[in-house]
Image (cartoon, rainbow, N blue to C red; front, side, top):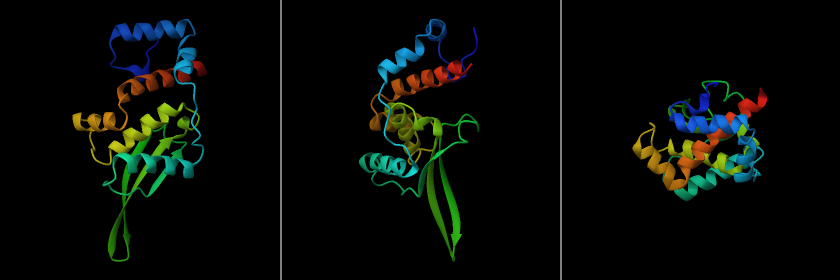
Length: 165
C-alpha cells in the first residue's frame, strides 16, 4: 500500500477503507456524489467578496483584510492550502499593518464546501494563531461540519494525487 500523505495520522482502519476505495476506483465518484456542486468564485475579486462576507457574518470585530487572492504557488510550498499573513510596512512615519489571505489555486475548481472550509480555517487564524482547541471551536462555529469537511478535503486531495498517477 502506498502512503497517503494527506491522511497521515489517521487510524489504520480508516486508511484501509480509503485504500479500498482507491483500488476500486470509487473514491472520486463517492466524493463527486457527496460534493458535486462547484462554486462560482472564479477570480480574486469574487474570492475577496466571498471571504469578506464570511468574515462580516462571523468575525465582525476582527482586523480588516487587505488582500485575498488565489495563489498558484501555494500547494508546492510546504503543502499549504491557504495562508494568512500579517504584513507591516512603514508608511510615512507610521507603521501600517495589513492582513492577507491566500488560497491555493486548486480550490478555484473545487467543490464549494471545500473552498468554504479553507476560508473558515484561514479566517480563524485572524483570532487564533495556533491550531489549538479555541481555534477549532471557532472553525466549528463558522462551519458546524468543519471536521467532516476537513477529512473529506483530505480525501479529495488524495484523489487528485492518485488520479494524476
